[in-house]
Length: 256
Image (cartoon, rainbow, N blue to C red; front, side, top):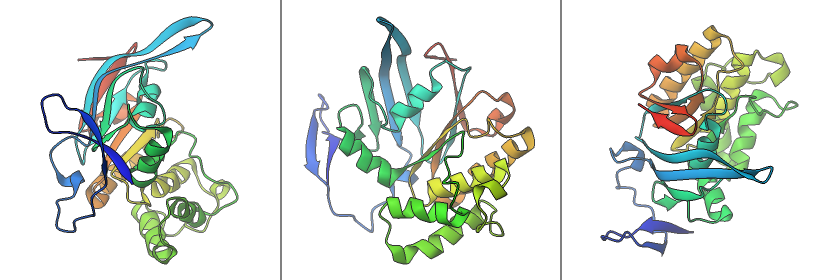
């Protein structure tokens, strides 16, 4: 698979290089201190009713490996739009988004999809589970879609569900689980293919404060055990204290 990377010179020319073979002795990227993701001068606007609506206005940010980063802001502040750009689901009108060595602002839809499938997991406010499948089958489906060999499914599914505290509920379907338990299944699903980054859009919005605190505890646990970076949106001030870094958004900009 080909990938975009930054040439090490003053002009930072973008060139396309064939991916090098994996080196088992190399230091995993997620253990390095350099940013996992960098956003530079990103702007995003949409045409609404013939008028230009500016949603993001010059965003600058970094995601450091093994941190829990929160995007705080009211509805309409631009949090979800930024999360979509970070995850390669959309592209900016201006600016740069570097995920590892991948230039999301330059790559095609297919190139970004390949990166997401391998390196990024998503958690949604509405859980996004298949209602007729058990917790086990939902996580197994995520592995199937990521192209993980079948021989690894059983061990990995069991590990992920145990990690989020659902060892005794893994064969229940979503309607048999509480909201907090459903979100735990969604987390297990998101980490199953061993991504380096998890993006979570308001993961505690549908939960009460106690369940929200438990989800935050799960996040801290998987950062430590799975070596994952998490970036999430929230408007809940009660969970901000567990974050390593908080970016506060107002009208498409970060404020100090």
